[in-house]
Amino acid sequence: MFGRTAAVVAFGAFALAAAITAAEAAPTECPQHFAGGQAPDLVREALATKARPICYAAYALLHSGVSRTPLWTAEHLTAESITAARALKRKNTFHPDPNLPAEERAELEDYKGSGFDRGHMAPSGDMPNPQAQDESFSLANIIPQHPRMNQIIWEWIESGVRDYAVRHGEVYVVTGPIYQRGGTFQRVNGRVIVPTHAFKAIYDPKTGTAGAYVVENIDTKRHQVLSIAELEQLTGIAVFPELPAAVKATAMALPTPKPRT
Image (cartoon, rainbow, N blue to C red; front, side, top):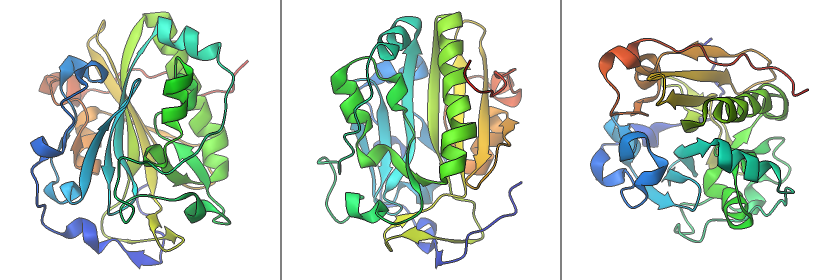
C-alpha cells in the first residue's frame, strides 16, 4: 500500500534538521483536546521545522509552514458534543488562518482549479457550535484531498468515529496527513504539498484500546488499520504519547467504514 509516490517536487524541506524541539512544537495551552492532557509528540525531529501550534475551541492542531497543512489535529469527542454538532447546519467558511505568517499558510487561491478537495482533518461535522464550525474551516486544518477519497471512504470513517463516540460516550481522535518518505510530492499552486495518505487515530479511554485508519490519497474505497506503534513508525508522530507500549502495539477493533443509513 505504501509504494506509491506522486512525482512533481521533492519534499526535501522535511529532511532539514529541526530548529525547535518536539516539546516546543506541541500545544500546551489546550490540554482538554488531548488524551491524558498530553499533545502528540514529533519523534521525527525534521517535522518540527516551521511547526506552529494552534488551539481552537473544539480542536487543536500543529501546522507545518513547509507543507502548508496540519501535521496533526486533535479532538476530544463526546456523545454530547456530537449530538450538538448534528443539530448544526454546515456553513462553508474556508479562510486562511490569521494565526500563521502569510508565507507559511495556505490561501484560498491555492486550491482553485487544483482538482483536489479542501479536505478537513478535524471534520466540520464534529463541531458542536457555530464558532467551532467556523474555526474548522481554517485552511490550517485542510489538506489537498482526492475528491473520491474525501467524499466516500474518508466520510465513512468520519461518520463511523462519530457514531462510536455516541455509543461509547467519548473518544480521543488525532488526524493528519502522511508524507511517505523516499519519494517526490505534488504541490497545488506550487505551494501546498499533497500528502500520499491520511490517517485517523482513535483512543477509547473506557476500554483502554486504540488504533488507526490509513487511507491512500487516491480514488479508493480501501483502508488499512494499523496499531498506534505502527502509525508512529510510518508518520514520525507519537499521536498518543501517554499510552502504554502494550496498548500501542495492538490495534483495536475499529468500526468498519460504511455508508450512512
